[in-house]
Length: 283
Length: 335
Image (cartoon, rainbow over all chains, first blue to last red; front, side):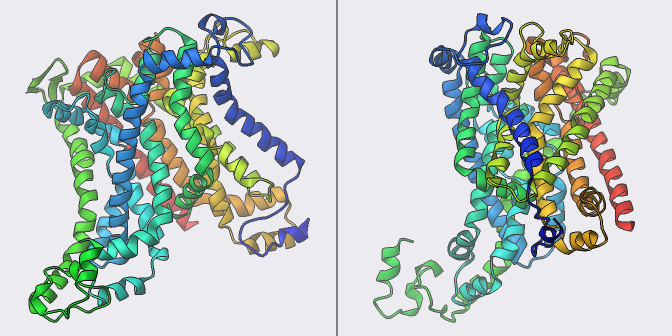
């Protein structure tokens, strides 16, 4: 045992035993079971879900319930809206975070360290605390129930700026910028031809994390939007408050609203895990 | 600035003033030493950093900082949802109203109670899971990704499912408890049962995420610390207690702060757990949090001035947390 403890790399690298696998297996089951059961419940009927014992296997009503949730529950429109909202926020956050992160990582300018400290400080201030003035403002602009009302307030992110800065500090060699500069490249050319190529892996990870957060944002969208023009979370909130009093349909809605992110996790899970762990060490 | 023009201009010998902008010049040629160009170049170098950070600060100022400060101004006014155009100055009335309200104190207590019940077990479990993930594992990516599945599930979707699982008759959780010989619990109506149920949703969603953060920190612990501990004859448990945990302190502090901030803002879980009267947090307000109280006062009852006062009270609580955090961090650094 002790010889394996003397692994040459950082971190402890003992081999896992059966107990480790059992505990991790149990934890994985607890993590996945509610999601699997959502699908089970979505394939049943409302009457069946009210009976004991609860259904433990799939029934035959999945497609019918999904369709009801899609049409009457407004999930269809909500999915399209959420795609627009989360897509726009992701594009804005990744673009502006990369550009600002580059400035903080590689350029010398007055007050740069103070401004960086302010940026880090703002990560700790929850945006929920400003919803009353935001609401008054959106009402003034006649933006209530319009998608820009939920896109613009989260269009940039302090976390994103800090994340990109930490990445570019080590991933972008200063000589590369110097070389482009002596060639007479303008700042925009440097951004396009030097910074973006170097930042691409971190931009992808930040994009995934931002998309998840934007898709799942709850408080401000339910204030700013209504059932006529909902995001997925607004539509789910409507379902939860009894818009359609059918538990099977509600579960079908929850399943639909989660599906795009689950697909993203299956495809890009490794990158998302890497992004969270990177952000942790540096944050 | 398409590529065709760029290449077209490489063909004729460049004649000084013909190229209008830097982008029209072929790559690799230094700029001609005309003075306006070098001045432009110097101006570009000086101004571009500010241009790069400007979008972030403009958006943050407009949609983050300004609303936060303006909330303080609104909290000193009578602002009604039904009549947004007439706002009258009322001084500290909204705050006085708040302090006299039993529901405010209940919400404060509930936020604190749910915060403790959800954060403490969550972070303890996360450390344990991270410790296991730090072993050499088969399929390590599989374990890491599956424990993030709850993080991918939105508050709304997760709460709808858990609410059904916790339902009083026919719910899967009461059905399982019956096998353990426990009478069915009325999770929504019970004072502590409802807090536990709401907390369990938070724990389910965030334990895996925090485990990954701890795992990242554990992997950064230098291996020779474990080597010397092992040479001193420390058991695995002693190594965990005397090497891993002390090295993880900054990360633990970080997760405690982030989770505490999250706990003070808790909103979606209790709202949807309460069904169609969710904004009250149950018949006796037994699981109404501060975030929920703000929403209820502002957008259900329609008193936006009072909602602003609640938001600033929450902000004050965050400042207290930040101060405590700084004191603890300083203590840790001294140790």
